[in-house]
Length: 112
Image (cartoon, rainbow, N blue to C red; front, side, top):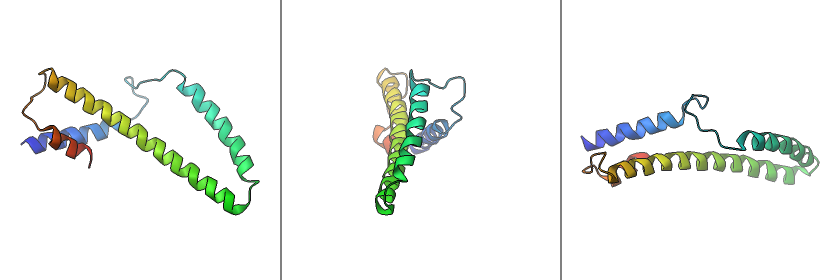
């Protein structure tokens, strides 16, 4: 029974993380939109510079930028899920959730 509960919690967190970010409860970080616009403008300028490089150097930078985007996405997902884990642990520590459930088992489901 414990495993089933943690499995459902893990599935819920993954579904919620992937939800539409335009929902009413979406968090808006101060400066996010402005920084996003600045990044788009810089990206266009950088792409113009990259195209002036020799093929080997250009490919290296393109590969690096792609990996950087992947890493940023993974870091965001990790931070999002860590926030949920911290909230669950806080509620458990306050006695608002059952404390006989294994934190280790919960973490196994989150990290798979």
